[in-house]
Image (cartoon, rainbow, N blue to C red; front, side, top):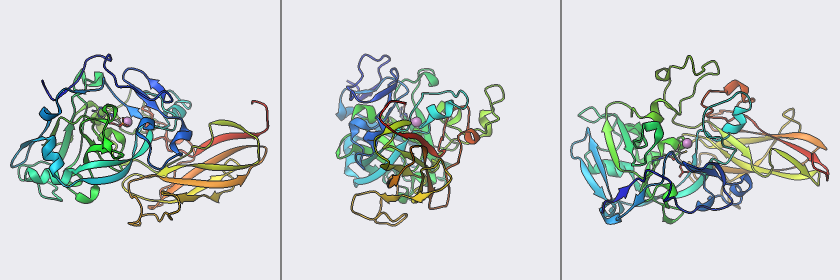
Length: 393
Ligand SMILES: Nc1nc2c(c(=O)[nH]1)N[C@H]1C(S)=C(S)[C@@H](COP(=O)(O)O)O[C@H]1N2
Ligand SMILES: [Mo]
């Protein structure tokens, strides 16, 4: 019996929570209701968004499962689960966000290609596993290596799932070797999520977690790690998850002209309200999540109850009762921040939220100016409509 295999149809999918909103059935893509996201700082596994490009792989025999680490390194190795568990175990709280989060809202400006997502293609988990920098040391790559002696500059992660974008081949992606071999970058080969073994949807038995980077680089169901000279040439690196200017369309697109998206931009979303709401009282609580890529903290979240004319600052927290201090070691560097503001709202209004990260990056005001044909990185100001009343709108 082999270790990890990939089915070619959807007859062996795992069970999923009924409250998930299904955006595509096969491959399975689903997100929780937005209100579920702010009910806990660490997102329960059941409510964590699921983003797949093929049927979910299956482990037949975990004792036979292994990861090959090879390519431009001195001593390539085949590592079994036991070898990976022998390495020091780290727990990193990190927010994973799909670059397609909020795509549906972008497609209202002009059609985009890709699975439609509301605002919940994001979740925060405690990932447990070995550091990739420790694994690389096992094959002779010291910490903080830019280039190996044989010219390796990138670390490619290859899975086993059968993706139609890869003509039935596996999902793959790469990150720069300098990031992979930096212990401070906290890149993990994770076997646990929120203190339990990963489940099948999230990459059992082993996945990569690249904190601060779009979810697409955190390869699930890891089969091999290749140290290579050039960036991974797979579909999801070269023909997807790239950001283009609004002028680029499907006729004039030149994929090679842009770099694969890595760090995600500053983002925030109101989760205590739907897009359109009727509330009973004028005094309401406005809360949600804010997060930025690259380990940048959240400096501020501004809330407007008059469509963006005037602003108040929301309070921010990660763990209730503990102050959040952006970029301080006491806080979870790779994780989202919740915000909250109480406000007395006019009878009929638009509520807006925008976040500022510790590099003073601010979300763009409108989705139109960042529209792109693949519908990625919609980080425009988050707006919801509210009316005080009793009847439906
Ligand atoms: N093997 C494999 N890894 C993958 C994917 C995939 O389809 N196959 N999807 C990627 C994308 S686009 C995202 S956003 C995240 C989603 O991780 P999750 O399903 O655990 O939330 O996994 C990434 N890793
Ligand atoms: Mo994604």
